[in-house]
Image (cartoon, rainbow, N blue to C red):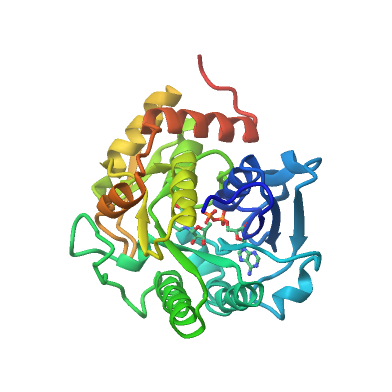
Length: 326
Ligand code: NAD
C-alpha cells in the first residue's frame, strides 16, 4: 500500500537531519505528520519551513522516557511509527553514550509499544554500523557483522543491533507489522556543521581554507548517499510487503581522500591535508550490497556525489555565512 492522504505518521527524531527530510517526504505525499524530538542533536531550524503547515505538528519529548502515548496528541490513531530518533555521529558516541543506548533500547521499545497499541506499521532506522568493521565486502543483509561489544563505537552499533532484535521480537511474538532499513552514510542539507561526521568536517575545513583532517591516511572507504535518495528508498520499503532488513545507500564507494579532494575542488579551497591515526574500531571499508532493494523494490539512487555535495556545501556555507567562490 502507498502511504499518503488520510494517513497519520509519527516520525521520532523528526527535528534531525534525516528525520526532517522524511517528514517532508510524508507531507509531500499528503500524510498528516507528527514529529517528536528532544533536540539533543536536532534543531528547530530543520522544521522551521513547516511552521504554517496545517498537516504538521511538533512535540518536544524524549522518546526514551515514560509513556510515549501520554506525550502525544490524542486525536486519532497513527498508521505509521517511524523511529529515527538517535544521535548518529561518532562524535556523540563518547559525549552522550548512555543516551544513545537508551534511545535505541528503551526508546525503540516505547515506539514499538505505541505501534502495537495503534495497529501501526513500525519502521526502524537501523544502520550499516550493525556490520561493524566488515570482513565481507560489499555487505549484504545476510552478513552478521564484525562488531566489538566493548569498544568506543559499541554504544551505537550494539544498541542498533538490539533495536533490530527487539523489533523482530515484537513482529514475531506480538504480530507488529515492521520494516527495518539499514542506512549507509547519508549526507545532505540540514547536517550540522559541527556534527562531527566526515562530510560536514571536510566542508567546514575547506570553506575556511584550513587543513582537512584525514584519519589513517584517508584510505578508509565509504559509499555516500544523498538524502533524497535515502528518503525514496525508505518510502519504497514502507509501502512494500518486505520486512527487511533492507540496505539503503549507494554503491559509489570512495576513499576519504577522494571525498575530501572532491569537496575541496567543488569549493575551490586552498586547504591542504593533515593526517591523524585511525580511531579505534573505525570500519576500514563500507559499501552496501544493494541487490535486495534494487531487485525487490526497484530502488535506484539518482543524485551523483558531485551534485549532492554541491547542494550540501551551499546549505552549510549559507548557515555559517561564508560566501562561495564563483
Ligand atoms: P540526527 O542527529 O540529525 O537526528 C537524530 C534526531 O533524533 C535529532 O533530532 C535528535 O535530537 C533526536 N533524538 C535523539 N535522541 C532522542 C530522544 N531520546 N528523544 C527524542 N528525540 C531524540 O541524525 P540523523 O543522521 O538524522 O540520523 C537519524 C536516524 O538515522 C538515526 O536513527 C540514525 O541512527 C539513523 N542513521 C543515519 C545515518 C546517516 O548517515 N545520517 C546512517 C545510518 C543510520
